[in-house]
Image 1 (cartoon, rainbow, N blue to C red):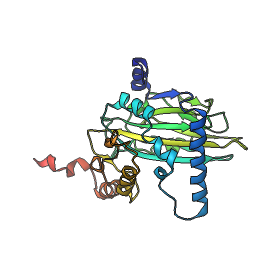
Image 2 (cartoon, one colour; image 1 turned 180 degrees about the vertical axis):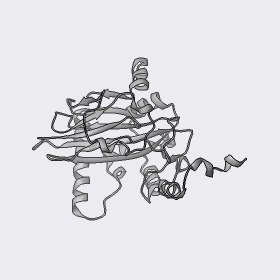
Image 3 (cartoon, rainbow, N blue to C red; image 1 turned 90 degrees about the vertical axis):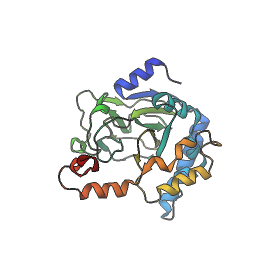
Image 4 (tube, rainbow, N blue to C red; image 1 turned 60 degrees about the vertical axis):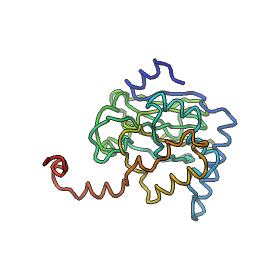
Length: 264
């Protein structure tokens, strides 16, 4: 799927933009799922896992997405999470942050990526996507940049003009933000993001208590496409993020001094 130039650009800058990645029919089906998801959230009852909505679930192992991810990370990678939301007029901002999952944050030895999907495109209303190319190589905690709000920083790229069905691929450690913008009446933003991580290390699980059940549900729904993408949902590729955060918070001083290998 990717040319050598695109691979080099991603390695250097940490992002790629794909206009009209999904056709009109695909966008309509995905937006219908998001409408159902938002209705379930508004009802106050139990909300199904996002993967249980047929078109959103199929998005996880979409063949074109799998090809791009393999081009970036090689043939062995894991699925981390999928989010979806319908954003309307007055939607708030998302301050500067990065989304690389690591406890504690120490290096970028293995790649993690996020796909941002804009099924209605971007048109300068509701919110602008902002990021700073090359910042994926800087090791900071996920929320360490939030004090910067959504200010325009040196080197900031603003993406606010994309046709419907476009996708933006970012290295998960790339600094990015969403700056709230006026307008959007009658034209909500249908947005989803999906994340994948390169095999070779253990990754923090998705931060909910049912993360194992979620992986099992995706296997039951055949989202591995008859085993073709079975590597996506391997529980043994993850550790419990909630327990890890508790452990890290309980260690005083330098955590390196508590490693077993230190005394050997």
